[in-house]
Image 1 (cartoon, one colour):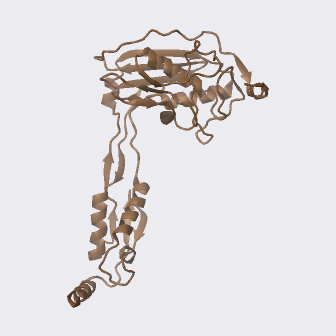
Image 2: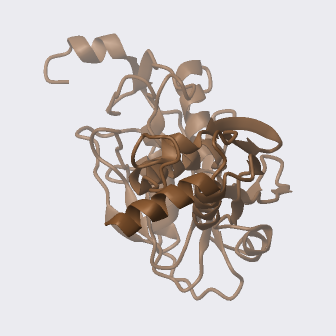
Length: 311
């Protein structure tokens, strides 16, 4: 016991009495500081016992401050290839070593936060490889004069564009497109297509999911989950729709092939199209599906739907 006390005293004397706080830099800018006493298990000057729980929590908070997500390679609206961007994340092992080194030695007083790269799932080489063969396509039509609905279709189409589904992977429309919110630019469509589910903000999204369903079915994808509207919609043949809602139904399909697939989606004027591509060597099994009606879908005001009994 006496030996332990003497060892603690000797270690305490070997430390700087009032070490400078450790300053942490990220991209050359100071983002936080930490004092040695904060890291001690016992809040007394010169304590030689680190608080591992506090240090772990500090590292967890630091992770969120320095993380930058990678960006997959994409195909722009004009067809040009936009290269991928590598992200960054905290190197937790090196950061922990630096914190304990500072705790025991009091130096250094300033360090750059150690980072390591986070690579994107899809790089330019892969994307260029899997856009060689068209294996499925579907086109639907809408009233471009219905500006709110057309706006929502465009936003969802942009979110869908350039998605890649790897072999054996299941694609979820809701997960990949995300929640349709005002913050993301979606608006409430005062007029919707007759029979289409109205989920308030984001009216028109079901036309995007239905177009994707038909393109995926044409390409021979394995349909995992699909629900039809309770009433017939007019932008696809009867029974060929896929209704989606953030708190309700989703559309999911699985890539059954040995090659990744690439989804190309675009909305122009009163037409939206989804094309599915893969590698030139893919052995795919397309399905025959009926085309979309060439006439513009029938529309009606939301107010009429709300007032109509049983609508």
